[in-house]
Length: 338
Image 1 (cartoon, one colour):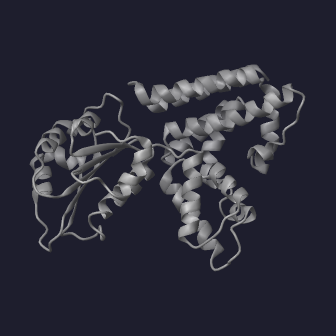
Image 2 (cartoon, helix red, strand yellow):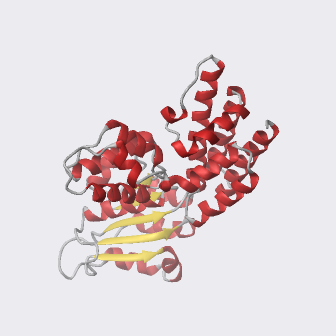
Image 3 (cartoon, helix red, strand yellow):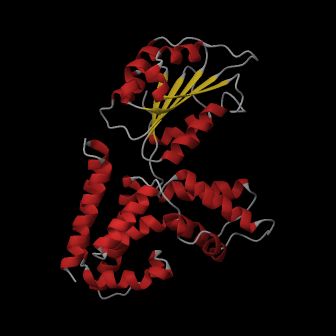
């Protein structure tokens, strides 16, 4: 079964009766892990319980295929349903899962974590075709979902948060859900017992733009025509575990801000970069880039980034290659305009 995006959060909180297995896949490793734990906890409160929780990897199943059915069919010695969690699964395991889903033994709930899977992935197809299983895509947070996460965490901590603080966090948090949660938790710890609403100043003091520093560096280097800076930023993004799709989305956001400012300038208006969410430390660089780009050329740059994201998700071309090629094309265009 394939869930619609609007159905995912409700399902993760309370899986439908009859569903025995869930596949979580996509570009956001943090969100995959968060949802996997949430699903498992609908069955077992304590995920460290060795009698009710079994953890496996895709590599282990390659070496011992029979173990999957054994674990799913096993009964908990202490009573209650069990959870079997599999990480690092891929298309190499598809036949194994397809056979299991056709006739699942026991009563265990199966939670499977994978990375990016193409639309024609055999593993996705196995879960989407089964009536007792679901496939859930997990992709980088957009502005709407980030706003929801920020407000939810603040409310759970008994805090109020100012609208401009929410906007600042949404603009500066990383695309990975786990990193975003960590940054928000750090902010809540900083606020402590202070009953006043979380302010923009609080966010700037704690979060800054560190969560997306490497991603921002890549975007600024590309639109500034800085080849050496772009190569260095992409290397640091890779070392930090940032996905190519997350890099492309931050570059898209930066290009959209430039396009809005360029269109305003061409209409005879001047837009303050900080009102667009550009951090004050980036203001001078943003204005330099604005002098290099017209709104028409920026629109083409945004098309290149969108095409690269689609290529990364739907073709056999490696996502990193699609991302790097798109940013280099933009850097070349920026260099020509100097």
